[in-house]
Structures are given as C-alpha cells and as structure tokens.
Length: 287
Image 1 (cartoon, rainbow, N blue to C red):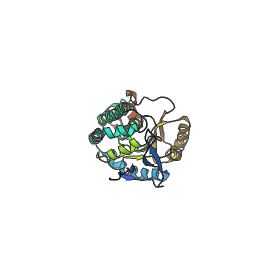
Image 2 (cartoon, one colour):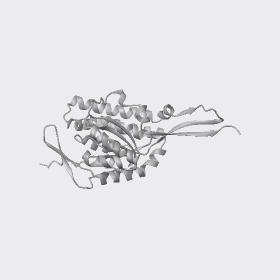
Image 3 (cartoon, rainbow, N blue to C red):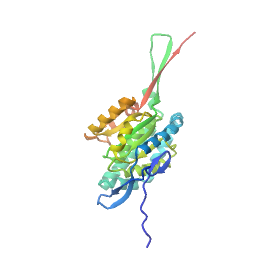
Image 4 (cartoon, rainbow, N blue to C red):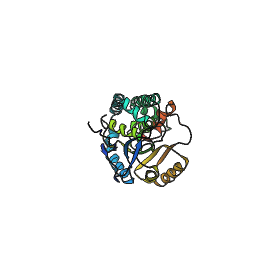
C-alpha cells in the first residue's frame, strides 16, 4: 500500500515558493480536528525579502498596458475556475459548509473578472481635464503608489484576500499580503494560481504568520507606501502610529464590526482610488 504524501505548503514570494526563513511552522487542522498540513510562520526577514522582490517587479508592472494587466487578471480567473473545487475544500477547512465555500469561491472569481474589466477604465473615471483661468492645458492622471501592504481578516479568507489585493494591482501597484491568521490555506492555493497566470513574479507576494510578529514591520517599513486591510482596534492604532512615522497612507476596515465581503460596496473604482496617487500637469497653450 502506497504511503500518503502530505502536502508541504509554501508561501509565494518573488515568483517562487518559499518556506519561512525561520523554519518555523504551525499545524493546521481541518474542521474535525485532524492534522492537515504545516503552515510556514513567516518572519520580519521574510517580509523584508518580499519588499525587495516587489521593488524589482514594480517598475515593469506599472509600465504594462492596462489591456495587458486585464488579460493577466482574466487568466487568474481561469486558473481559479479550473481549481474551484480545491479552493472550496480549502475554505471548508475553517468550518464553512460546502455551500458557503462554493459561494465564496464563486464570488472570488467574479471579483477577479470585475477588476480585470476596470484595468483600462479607472483612469477615465479618476483622471480629469481641469478648467483653469490661464492659458494652460491642465490635466490630472493617476499613478501607482508603489508597494502596498495588505492585512487580510480571518472571515471569508479567500474572498477578503482577493478583494484587498485586486484594487492595488489593477492600477499597477505591487502587494505584500499577510494571509488570514486562522485560515491561511486558501492563500497557499492562491499563490499556486498566481504562479501560472502570467503575473510577473514579485507583483503579488503572499505571507503566512502571526500578526503580532509581522504588523510592526508592516507599519514602519519605509518602502511600503500604503496599508490596506481589516484589523481590530488595537492593531489599527499600532499601524496608524507606525504609518505616521514612515508617512504612508492607511486604508483600514474595522475587523470587530461585521464586514460583508460579498457586497458590491467591497469592489469598484473607490477601492482603486484609495491606492493611487494623482499627478496634475500644467501645459502652456499658445505662444
């Protein structure tokens, strides 16, 4: 009789699958309490390595055409659709029923398609031509901020993670995302799909680990230009204090309040607006 081979989950950083620099793991059990897999416990060093990978990938991703970014996101949706049953099983590890898990996976795929459609449209909505009382042509365009730190909540571990990552990469940013603390396995599978959807390595980096160890570095790392996610009151305060010191934008939801990640309010151009910068150009008209 052949021995069953237990999967070794790895985090997705810089286009490669890594184990934690520390070598530490945490046992993940299924809803019945049986052992499922060992999840890497990433450290501040892993986070700094992910930032370096994102910094290398950032300029190239920002220069991609909007059409090409949309194609890549659509390809991600195809990868998720092909492994939808496996994704649902990953969500069910946290105790969700098959119907609930299937609904979450379906909503996640639809959210990817939603943002794939926004890649070549958000600029027309957010940019503008501005009337000025002088002989100038004045216009405003958006630019990606750079590297965005994402902190995913424990609820809806796949849909919430997808909903936080997509607005950032749609506009040309790169992402360092910390997966759900209690339900990290969906992020492991998502990394496998990101690796096969033509997304350049380093654009999305997925880490697993303890928030108490990772959040201080998220807050203070100067190469992270913004923070997005859903965290409790104590973590929000700590993140905002660290972000003020390193001058980064903060867009955090209150994890202690119910968040309906399935709602239409959790997707769209306003989420993209929160993670872009605006550049206004004045151009003389006439002689």
